[in-house]
Image (tube, rainbow over all chains, first blue to last red; front, top):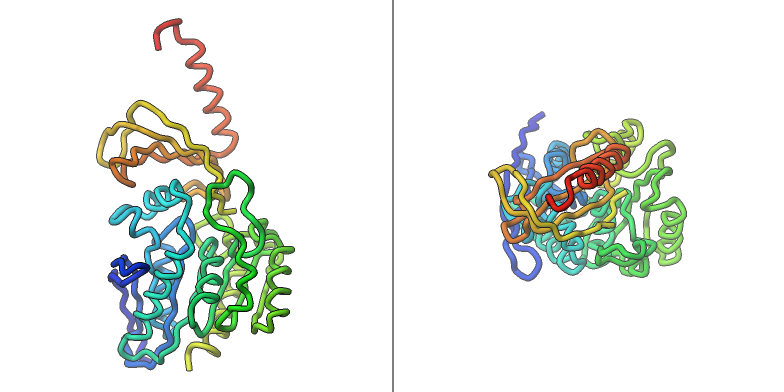
Length: 247
Length: 86
């Protein structure tokens, strides 16, 4: 089996026509390949997220992770960029949608693309994955423990986001949700509310909540890592993207 | 938990970052996931000068008990300084 892949930093056209930094990983066989937009967690466009991006290429997908903090902190280290973005209240929703649209367009235009593009996001990126899938024509979406899809940020939080569960009727594609039963952001009740809203809207979705896991259980470099949940979660992702993106 | 709950305070002084000393203008204080400390949540402080860019930053990530001990030590040090010295 030919399994070569490559990864590199590129620039793509994001929201408002801005050129933004992104990390591309792609298999080197001719394809055809589905595409995955990887939305990084709030701590930024870091080494671990780049590893996740490469993992999609290893499994046969073209993957692009836009650096959502390109504008605040061009060239800065990921942690400094995340601090700068945090201090400014996070990534505006409209800008996120524009950047995700640019990444999806890039993937669909790649040689060997099968014309399909999906999205996956972690932590704040989980909410942004849902937002992108409700705002753009996509083929599959994965929300990994995204907070504030349901529920309002606590009073005093300068984060400029609000609940977006009302967008459920606009969801353009099937949604896979992976959550920790011990998570408080989102809580199990909030996950249940999103599940209910999607069911009422007649939207295809699959939710899995893992006992003994909290927020960020996929994060291999953090104490929150839960191997059993993460391994099952990855298996769910391969199954889900295999059905909706690969062919 | 990924929070944006942040206390921001204007500060005067200097900090030493990756490219040497720089003037400080602001500090962000928040509880969230650390980048490096081996804990799920920490009290994080970013000493910043936004006018010099995102890399003008001195960061610390402290356990809650360490942060409280630090706050107490700061108050104690200031309180024990001779009157009028600083």
